[in-house]
Image (tube, rainbow, N blue to C red; front, side, top):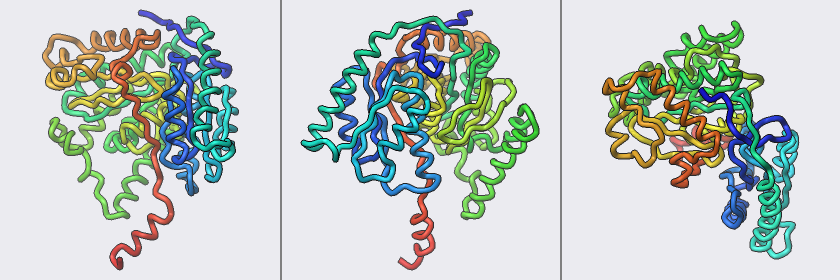
Length: 399
C-alpha cells in the first residue's frame, strides 16, 4: 500500500497535486477578460462567477468565500483577481481573503487599465506568465496522506451505486482518515432519511444534534413553501436507475463516507477545522457541490456515478467510478474505474476499494483523470435567492 505521494508544498503547509494559476473574476462582467487571460497562459484556468454585482447577505458571503476558497486551494500556485471596478464584490475584497491564506495573489480592475478590455487582458497575461514561470521552478516532494483532503461526490446515482462504487469509495475514505488525512462528504439534501445513522457517528452530542436539526429544518422549510421534498427525490434519472425512495438514495450517498467518526459540519464556502471525516452543508447539486469541496481545500474528488455523468472540476482532479455495466459500455471514455465487477460477482468490494485507492495514488502523483483529459472543467457557485425574489413571489398571482 502506497502511503506517500509527490506534491507541491505551499506556504500555508498544504500540498498541491497540481500546480495551476487561478484567474478569478470578482464579477460576471470580468468573466470574459479572465477567460481570455487563462486561454493565453499555459497552466492558468479561469474560475466561473456569474455573480459579484448587487449581491447581499448570505448570497454575497457564499460567493466571496467560495471564490477565495477556490483560489486558495493547494492545487493553485498563485491567483490573479480581475475586477471591473464598480461592483460591490470588489477585487480587493477577494484578494484580501486570499491573502489571509498566504497564497500568492495579485489583483486589478478593468476600469483602471487604459485601453479597455484588450489592455486588461494583456496586463493579466503578463502577470500570469510571470507566475506560471515561477510555478514551473517548484519541484515535487514526497508527502504522506495526512496532507490530503478528499472530496466524496456522487451524481446520476442508480441502484448499483449503493452496492458497488459507493461502499468501495467508503473504504478509500476510511483509509485517508486512518492515515491522518481528511475526507469531506457533501450532498446535504441526500442525507434525508439517514440523518440518525450519521448522528450516531458524530464525535459528540453537539455535532449529532446539528445533523438532526439541520435536516429537520430543511424539511420544515420545504413544507412551509408547500413542497414535499420526497416527491422530488429520487429524481427521474434515479428512478430510471432503480432507486425508489430518498432513503435508498441516501443510504448510497453516505456509504461513500465509510465508517469513520464524523468530526463536524462545514458550511458552504468553509473549511474543515481539523483532520478526519467532515460533512458539508450545500444544496446537493453536483457541480455546486464539487465547487464547495474545492473551496474547502480538497485536492482530489472521487465521483461515483450510476447512469453516467461526464462532469469534472476545474480545480480538483475528479476520479469517475461506476458500478453500472451499461454505463461502463456507453460512457467508458468518461470513466476511470469500472466497478461493475462487484455487481456481476467477479470482484469483491475490498478488491475494488484497493483499485480505487491505487487510482487515487496515481492521480495524486500526476496521472491525469479522464475528466482532465477530456477538458471537463465545470464550476458553479451555489446562489441563495436574494430578497427581491421573495417579494416577487408575494405578487406572482397579481401580475
